[in-house]
Amino acid sequence: MDRIRSFLAVDFGAFYKEELKSILSGLQGTPLCVKWIDPEQVHLTLHFFGSIDQKAIGSVIKNLEEVLAGQNPIEVYLKGLGAFPNPSHARVIWAGIDGNVGELEELKERVDQSLEKIGITSEKRFFKPHLTLGRLRQPDKNLPAILEPFSGFICPRNFHIDRLVLFRSDLEPRGPRYSPMHYFMFRKADVQ
Image (tube, rainbow, N blue to C red; front, side, top):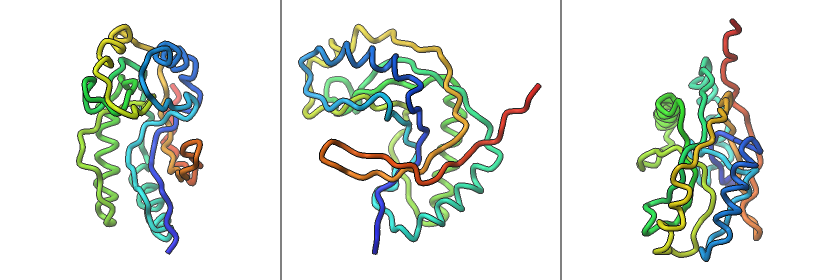
């Protein structure tokens, strides 16, 4: 049985590349032991499938096409830095997403409910829209002080979410390689 490691996400591509490079250059000069993410590969995961049977991919695509038909674009922007599960015991450093977050949360809820109908369960964690910037190899008690200079970070340049991408994730020695398998295009905004 062939299985594919995959996830559904908003692909930001290089849209925030310069802003994220600026943040990363400030953080990379610190003593943190972190595996940093390529700023051009940042994405907002809406559903992580893990390893899924390749034959199930067709059902997932059909199901999501129905759920996402008629979905309006969503405007978001970057705001704040933080860490999961918290700065004192962090494993992940992230940039926050703000803007029409309520619409994004509703979208995720619809996606999760529709996938559960075809037997694909969702993570039960609280959904906090974010872009992962790096993964700490071990928690660092100095992280709250290191993140403090970035507490007011905001990039009000709106990103127009007009599609979701089903990605294949292949784990390689240099890190994961993401390949798009399917694009779910949103409805075009009405022209005034």
